[in-house]
Amino acid sequence: SAVISQKPSRDICQRGTSLTIQCQVDSQVTMMFWYRQQPGQSLTLIATANQGSEATYESGFVIDKFPISRPNLTFSTLTVSNMSPEDSSIYLCSVRLLGGIGYNEQFFGPGTRLTVL
Amino acid sequence: AQSVTQPDIHITVSEGASLELRCNYSYGATPYLFWYVQSPGQGLQLLLKYFSGDTLVQGIKGFEAEFKRSQSSFNLRKPSVHWSDAAEYFCAVGEPEYGNKLVFGAGTILRVKS
Image 1: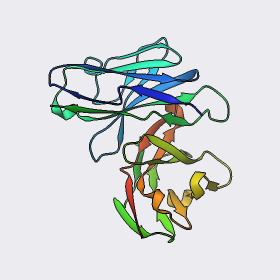
Image 2: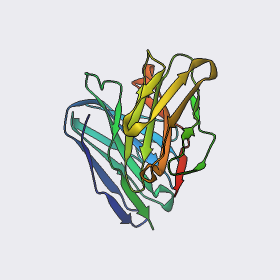
Image 3: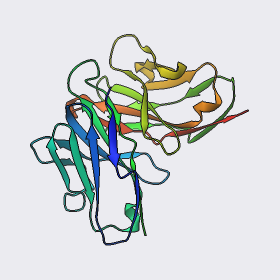
């Protein structure tokens, strides 16, 4: 398995500002994913972040709004830019392990609860 | 496009009673199937997974799930529910050709009454 931490755990932000969420993993991982969970909703994939390449965004999500960095195999950041109240959600980082019996499993961080006023 | 359906938004069971949460998927090939649990204010925890082989899989916390290809289902079961099982449960399908990107169902909220 993998131990995943996210910072911050929660934040309250003003509209028009930006927030960067950090995801740290205790082991090297091939793929990291960022999900959004809007209030009362299921999880929606925002993008897949591979080390050394540009993130791949899902339909409805764009890099200008959700820029992602993946500088190494254990760390990634997601920025929520120019926030509006509609961005109020839980943002979750997940990882797919590099090889081993957990190769096809994804493990999730605790999430970042964002409220935009 | 692949999709996951969890037809029950809420389920309430008595403590000690059996539980079955339904999950149906739409996917062309044999999917990778997962059940996750999310307790209030917590992240997602993997309960169990199916990749291939035995269609009845055992997971943590006494949960099991059965893959039925003919019904495109992967229902989650537990013979005796505990109050601590109250949480939201998500079924998910992994897409092997897309690096196992997960598609989630809408979730089922389980309430346990004493």
